[in-house]
Length: 275
Image 1: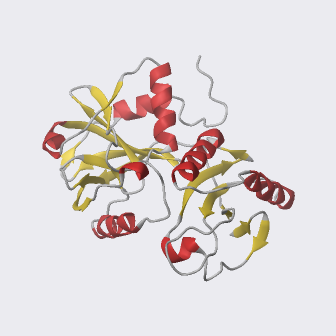
Image 2: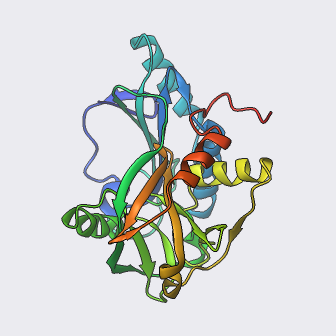
Image 3: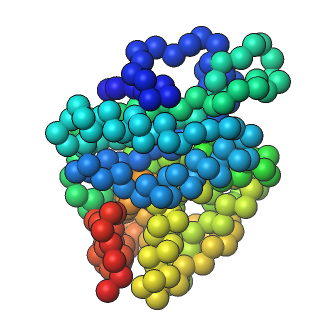
């Protein structure tokens, strides 16, 4: 793993950094595949949107400068890229410091293969997600304690990914993914009005479905509808389709998900062109 802060290689983070002190900032996690920064425009758009709503003054060109150094060091970039925007160091207290945000770029090299659907068993977690401050809905802030608690339960139940409901009984997303659900032969993804993350892969899949003429509703899904679920898949930037074969003990339809994966060319994230 390598880390850059404002395009300079570092090996430690300052103890007064507000990302550490308060979770004050935002982040995005992307895949690098054969030197391609997949869904780059969507990741940058996410960071710009979050920076605006979090009042962060950030220079995203520092990401490019960090990537250039990595490209000069590696023959080919493959792995995971995590970009953290921190408000930077400051004194004790919540008042905002008056300086530019810091940009951290983490590179985790690993063997990366072409995307393909992954079949998993899943379920609905007992733990519930809370509601988010309206201005922060959809933003991937550094405060991920809910996901840490949710992941603990999912791990204990042996689920790689699981559905999460909120305190109002609405299905929101997976622990670390968005979800797409088929009910009465209709694809639906939760609208994420009160909580959840507006994932870059979710946005990409919705656009490709629209281009392919496949209708996908964005609406609330109440937990009372769970017995009607025909198919479920989870998506994030590192895995476009984890297909649930079972929801608890209920067998789900998987072939339609695999066919959708092929129709949307989800194995291609940097060269997809609608035929």
